[in-house]
Image 1 (cartoon, rainbow, N blue to C red):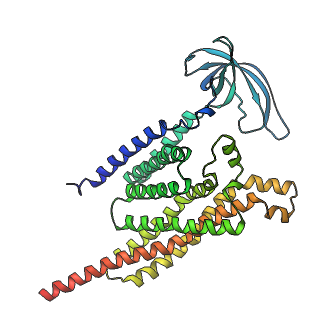
Image 2: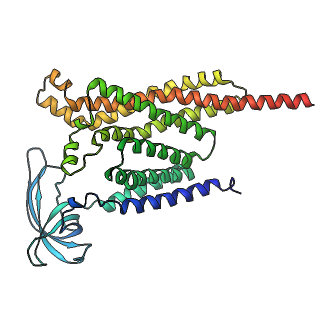
Image 3: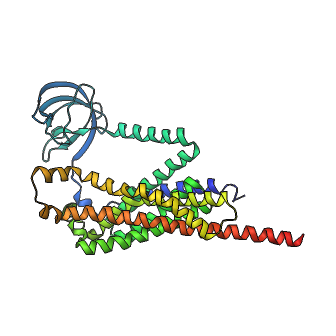
Length: 391
């Protein structure tokens, strides 16, 4: 009975775990309560009228200037109330050009030592929440339309990953847990749940989990080796200063390690699943294949997989650094100074440590898969021989 419904039991159990994670994350954020700004809230609103528009385009093609807007608040105690707010446009990512009907997010602050109806309000950003939910939902629909039940299982694994990071990992770290060990444990948990969700229970899933987990161990080795060579510590990251100012100082030097691990987790799983699938398919085609044959064939195909995938993380990390590289070139930064900058070294650490782990993940997965499937083939052959001898 349990075997028949074990996949359903698994999904129900994981769903219950996610509910517990969400409860834990929502109710465990008291340590930095002193950083909360009293009287400040961010309220979604809709522009009712553009009272005055004093904007124009600058030389770079960005709209700058200011607007006076009449907006209707969509939530909070003042829901439904219309207020007049100012909107300053600077050529930065927060610049919001509002038209009638535009949904915006309002920075709303009750002024201290004043009457209840006195406040300061301004446009903070576009209200992107509904758009984000629609995009995510459309992505899940696309997964379901193209891959059917497997697509829905992939969506479930994505939701679990999101809940684990936001409602478990972050609260644990901000409440004093050691960042690196917690991230490693939860990364392995994400691997196990995600792969079982997508592929179910079976040898291929087991091979993928083992390969991905060993890939994490490879990443740990490469991270500490490369960081020692390049003399990089977690304190070299710019945002660390902001965390220390905010009162968070325990284990901040481990956060760079944790961030790279989370960013590379998907690529490690991709490689492990690809090699596990290849080994399973080869074993299915040739029931009598031994370990050497499976491993040799798996590595031949694995070379092509790694050959096309080895650039994945390097290009991903470099792409996020593109604007900084352009800035270096525009300012004619000398090569010797550029190549010795700490931010360049951090990008190299991110790209190489994760990519090298992904490269080693392939032969490890091929080895594990060949060993598991070859042992199954050997048992099958020996059982056939025993059956013939009985006859």
